[in-house]
Length: 50
Image (cartoon, rainbow, N blue to C red):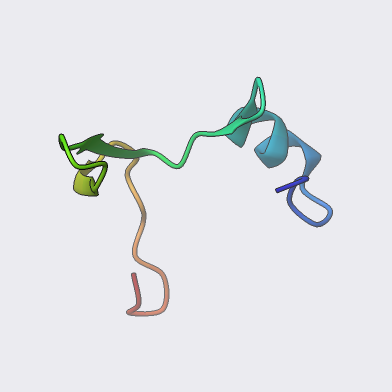
């Protein structure tokens, strides 16, 4: 991912040292599977959609 179209501030917060910080919490198990467990960022509801 290079960035967000016309949103350089958002891209700067999300892309740090070549890693994408999604705001999700998760872990890898012993076999390499990834599990997403929680959301770290609050997402406001807009137009009755998440």
